[in-house]
Length: 235
Ligand SMILES: Nc1ncnc2c1ncn2[C@@H]1O[C@H](COP(=O)(O)OP(=O)(O)OP(=O)(O)O)[C@@H](O)[C@H]1O
Ligand SMILES: [Mg+2]
Image: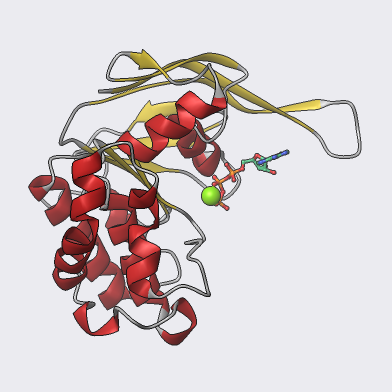
């Protein structure tokens, strides 16, 4: 359902005319309901890759297909519509609206959703998802009044509100303690199964890669699948 073909990404180096190539030649294919982890050191291009997979950024060369539709090119309006309707994004820095309550934060994407049924059902679905992630008591809190792990879970609910086909998570457990991080991971996997979404996570956390169906390593601008026997075998 998600396919990256020979994606290349160059950035203009600030302060010079030179270009730095972050992604050299990246190809990746993700099936519905599949869980994929991309690992790699800081600065290796994980967020860049995820942004391109989510049509938030455009590749310098190559193509990105979501259910056969090229999302690496085209009008920003069309891409924004696809992002809103089909892709859920959990950002490395969660980007919650500080002045809005938890409930308001998670239904924001539904307000501009083209699907009327989703708009109508948003508050009900939000309440249900907030319950699933253990935040029923926090609907009226603001992001500044909840913990980091709770904010991460709010971001997760927001990413799922429009019933996306693809969920992209950038360091979903970043800055969380082990216990909370495991809880968030379990939730992601449970929702991946229950909501029938494809899940792509990027992280340098071992706990994230050990629970994915496939693990890829980003190194020198290329993506290489790690053999499961060589990595961990947590089942
Ligand atoms: N807009 C930009 N302009 C120039 N260079 C950029 C830009 N965005 C990212 N880069 C560069 O691309 C490289 C990869 O950045 P990216 O954020 O994708 O790394 P990452 O693997 O997500 O790292 P981390 O694990 O620290 O989050 C970095 O060297 C960064 O400086
Ligand atoms: Mg990053």
